Image (cartoon, rainbow over all chains, first blue to last red; front, top):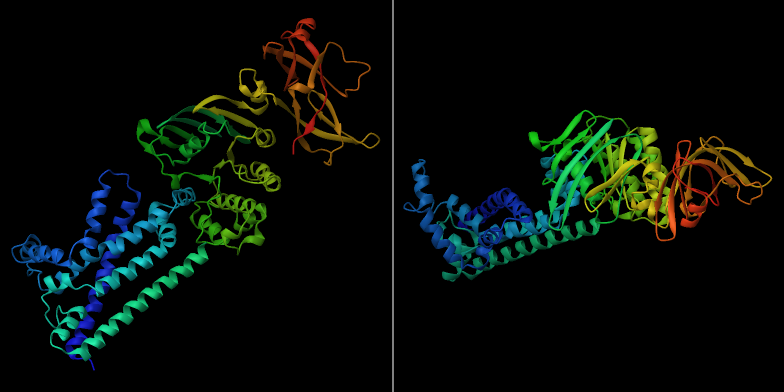
Length: 226
Length: 355
């Protein structure tokens, strides 16, 4: 039914999406918090940079990443200087590309959720002896839970669904950097419609189930909290 | 315990410059019109206005001294803060809200059960916070603040958003707070009724400046302050219930300055109550009248006389150690020769118990 290469593409896709989502939650949370609370004048510039992957053709992002991660680019050169290899056409390169590409899908829901938290809850917590770190875990995260869920689902699903960026910087190496979306493309190119159907249909159902689950949990949470 | 507060804060259309030292015995009311800076001052004390510069000492502890770069962050100040809208955490139940405070308390001067019993919320513990009435929310907020065992309780108009019934329900809890737990309380309000009911001391704040501060009876009757000059100017007598007259249905109160009779009230003999006497209900006579329908005649000394308007003067009286106000005509003042130092009698047409 599924070819060995298809299975490894599925596994690579799953790994890529999971690692990317975890990194994005770790990086995106402080960034979104800062964006939600800062009064700094340059904030729109940062917001625009975060949102760029929404409007740029993935090939543009992919092209610049390829240049940057390659042996003569700054990131690739740094990697070599540290005793590594250039990052183009590697799994690490894919992760870096995916993190940038999916950044707005994680940062924006989190920023919206953080903005919606009224300051007086944080102040009340402070007057009840909660330190800033304590407040973050005991008040901010629970109140922003729907935002975190949306960010996780969108970040994961969007990484699973990316094509242009991974094609440019991953190089479509089966077993190493070939992900599902590219495997489907290859099957169609080779007129292997049955295999393309299996993968495409599977991806469609998987994405749909993830989104429905996310929205259902969020709805229940909102009903409980209203 | 004394509390020293000095703050300066500049905002867009408002500046706060405040310097007060107050002895913290009983509830201190922070009183003044809306927009006068009451809430802002409370927030400065709690450390919630980081741009406020100044000095703050509570008892022996210095919480802020900007000249020495000392700023104790809000969560390390031993305060309880009751916000206007209660601000209960929506993701926690009533019980969860209380435990939030209890877990983080540095010391435990009041137990969970005591706080719950004191505020009368034991039947609400399992409820979600959005299923509470306004009065219930404030009681939960009060219990939550008490569970951090604060030295200093800051209350920002805790009764303002409540209807009459909930107000009457909550008032006794606040009254008892000081007596049972000996916590210093700073109470923000713009309601003179609440001040008359609860406060021992008062700080008058207007336009970001302190207009006066002192004992409530002195503040209410100070002729320099706007309170005494308002139409509803009132003075307060603290008195003890001594007997009930069953024949005429009167209650007799006694204070250092004499006795007061008022239509019978349901209160136990020995109880200390507060009585409001409006300036417009007080008249002055040389000798106690022999035939008069007015029951309450109190010997007083004239302390101060101030012109109120073209026809009236305001007179500050002293009955042993209680201040009273009388609003009389300029003509009467001239005819009766009402001058400071003179001994006279104050006829009080009506008095009412504050509750």
